Amino acid sequence: MARRNRKRTKRHCLGDQLLQRVKRDYDHTPLSEIGSVIADGIQFAKHSDSEESGEFLRGIENCLDALPSGRQLSVRFGFDATLIQAIRDQWTTGKCGLPQMILPKYGNEWGHQPIHLPSAQRERIPRVDLILFPFGDDLDDLDLLVYPWLVHELAHVLLMTVDEPFGNELHTNVHEYLKSARLRALAASDTVRQRQESVLRTIEDGWIRNGKGGNWAFEIAADTVAVWTTGPAFLTCFCDVIANHRLDLFRIDHSHPSYEMRTKAILMVGDQLGWHQECRELTSRLD
Ligand SMILES: [Zn+2]
Image (cartoon, rainbow, N blue to C red; front, top):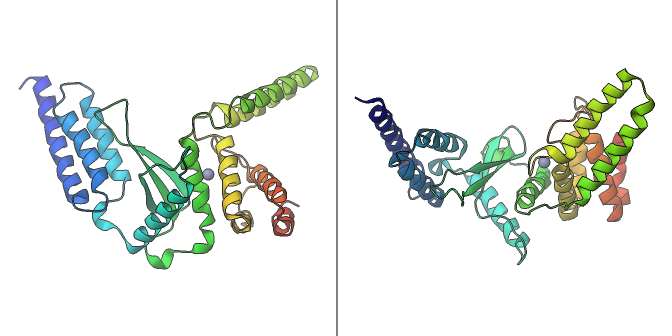
């Protein structure tokens, strides 16, 4: 068999397997709408002669691995999905709102994972936003005291729907800061200047360069929305996290600024809202 035909047969087999999996996991379930979008994508790739369609099908397979199966939805899944729906209704106004497809998923910690469903219409790729809840999907695993973090994660989803949520002002301010810091470093020795340059590059990456929805500005904004929305309940949740003596308050990564910086930002917001008393314990954690 010619190499091209072998590849096509292989693609057909993978496409059929994936269609069976979608039928088994999504047909006649609360997630059937997602299943039908995925099935359309599979049909498109199965019948396409494009060399890329094999990769497209493997992308669909990865999506299916990440998404919850519609056949195994727990009572807790129903509770969390209903809560998300209620918050979506509250937050959706004429100008902005949360997207339709937001699903709970269970893991080790809170998080947000956007999944882009491979679509035949490349210009309109549907997205499913997974909100990662700790820990298991059993009702016994549910702890409402930590649910202000749900609002933080939904704020990430909301911010992804807005083009340029921080305008140009953030870029201008960061660049001005970097420029004056580099000028001040001119008189320093080569070693000091090199070290400082590495720190400044981290600051630039953290605030500006890293992708949409994944830089420090989004993290601070999500914390701010959580304080505005759930008030002292979020301050307490945050306090519980930084009370963990194994947590490094000064650790940074590409999407998260240090907890020290986040704490200061949250305290500023709490203070502006007049929760001076409620901010006290969090303030003491920084001492
Ligand atoms: Zn976050």
